[in-house]
Image 1 (tube, rainbow, N blue to C red):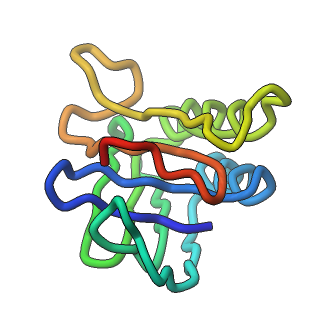
Image 2: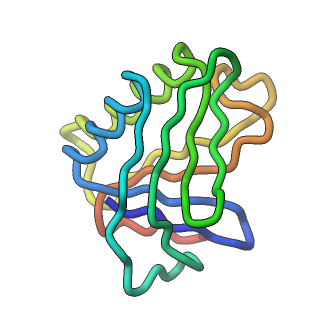
Length: 133
């Protein structure tokens, strides 16, 4: 799994194998945890690679995605993290999804589970780097 970050847009890309993405969905669903990520030699078209994904369950609040130093932090109340978990798991398990398919997780007004200050996230399969980062 890898996480990349675009300084200019604030967007992150989180990509992995279907099994890795399903494991992430498990962390989102089951209480959180930390995932150490391997180094990435060339994060292009993004600006830099992140070293860790940190999932944190909070007592209340919609999901907030942010980058803190070298860490992609995903936090929120369990009921909202469960919705994100289902989206990630559904994407990872989709038999029709090819290597260029990706899932956008972006806030819009009245979003059901994302906080207004949540940073945009693209979830993709390993090797996927959607253009426009």
